[in-house]
Length: 450
Image: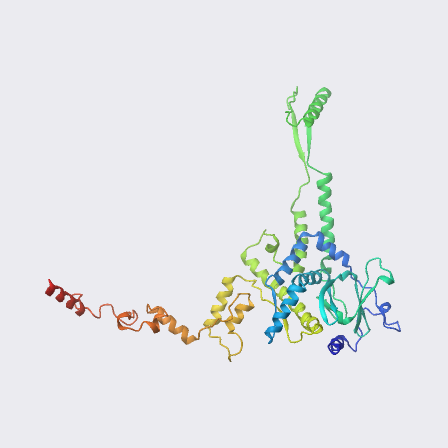
């Protein structure tokens, strides 16, 4: 176990210097680390308060996990024991959702492995906003620390490297931490907050109002009108009746803020900024305006790439860090494939793959068509067999001849053989009167008996 951990540390170590390290310090400790330019509280508020961003991240997590995960390997007994450990005891499906949410919101996620001796008793997601990585100038991680808000030195919790699995989503350059995936839309989100506050103030302080314009009314008429208006305000069911001595009477005008295309365009632009980062098709989070099937399918492809890349990053860290630390090096963690396209489209592509004659070069592995269907999330039984081109051709010829496939071998009796419409003529056994020899014979026998 120690050798495995040392190997992982060596992988993360480099001869070059890493970013965000104070090289003026003579000792490599937590004090040598520069303050991070990461604002976890802000991005968490963005996720909690913005309905579009929240829905987009929900859809991404659900798409990545709804089809389940699996462990593969040569030892079937070990696979069953690992499934029971992860899903019955460690509640791994919920932990996986937790890790994905933190990755999509923060860019980082930390998973603690808790042991009782050599036995794994719990996998515990840690709060990313409170975690600190202690590393050297060459990028070797020496420990992890949890620093709660308002912490004192005695409140710091130290974690050994072998007890933490660190996930990072947007790793660029030599920086130890991930860059925040929601940072590019921070300005748009701030603008959207101001826009929503502006709308709130409009509805709060500028409700629609009515302005009554009395045409050439004398003071007595004005007083009477105001008295009548107050009376009906107190009793909305009472009608307002006005008597006037003027020819023109009065006009009634309504004043309210008009939500024209300018304001709507700004709000739509801010929504598009959010969707640009998450890549979730607008129709998937309820924005149906201007959407149709063709545009939706065009947007599914980049979202599918994003989800598959997210799955790849998480699966890689589980296989390289979590499973070795748990002594499960002989197993591989995988996400089950997901069908983002319609089943009709998938089956049409599979049919074309079959038509061009794709075959395995050897007996190992699934047939290319079966492999494609499984990768697209179509559940295929393990016993599925793809017929050869020759078998398919025989089947098609049999069907064209009016013979169902089971009858090709079983129905060999001459009395049960059917006429091949492609080669036999319907009149080949009839004379010029339309009577066959067999028909004549039956007719003669009928006459004799009569």
